[in-house]
Length: 143
Ligand SMILES: Cc1cc2nc3c(=O)[nH]c(=O)nc-3n(C[C@H](O)[C@H](O)[C@H](O)COP(=O)(O)O)c2cc1C
Image 1 (cartoon, protein in one colour):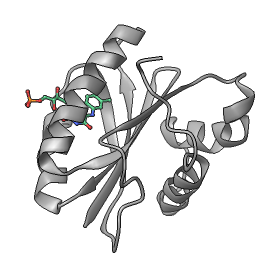
Image 2 (cartoon, rainbow, N blue to C red; image 1 turned 90 degrees about the vertical axis):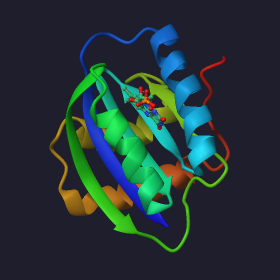
Image 3 (cartoon, helix red, strand yellow; image 1 turned 120 degrees about the horizontal axis):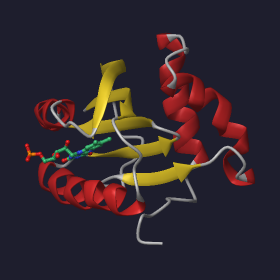
Image 4 (cartoon, rainbow, N blue to C red; image 1 turned 180 degrees about the horizontal axis):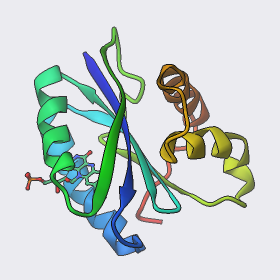
């Protein structure tokens, strides 16, 4: 099992419809390729974790990296792992805002990652924090 986490910056402001169309395509393709993970969107930043068979993760990441809806992709880690963190989600999604109480505790560290000022060795910790944070609450774009 292989896991990859990256951050990037949206090339324009993302409306709900933009995000939902990304998710719709993502969930279908990830499901087909046995890839799971989490996508967070905050300000103009994206943070995504992809996990699954190595070939599949790299194939999907290759397509993502060519996508003009975002730029400045930076891989925070890629590694072999014994098991998935987000096994039930073809792509869990949440859109964060600075003032939402639910995400306040997680906001700063993830914002640091997105805004490019986190130490790479902290990234694995963030992935595990996010998994614990989202054990109950998997945000959906259909809301
Ligand atoms: C921030 C972001 C995250 C994305 N995440 C995924 C994803 O998890 N899985 C996926 O298949 N496509 C994802 N996409 C869409 C891909 O970039 C691409 O449009 C899609 O995989 C179709 O690629 P293809 O036409 O080469 O098959 C994402 C796009 C963006 C901008």
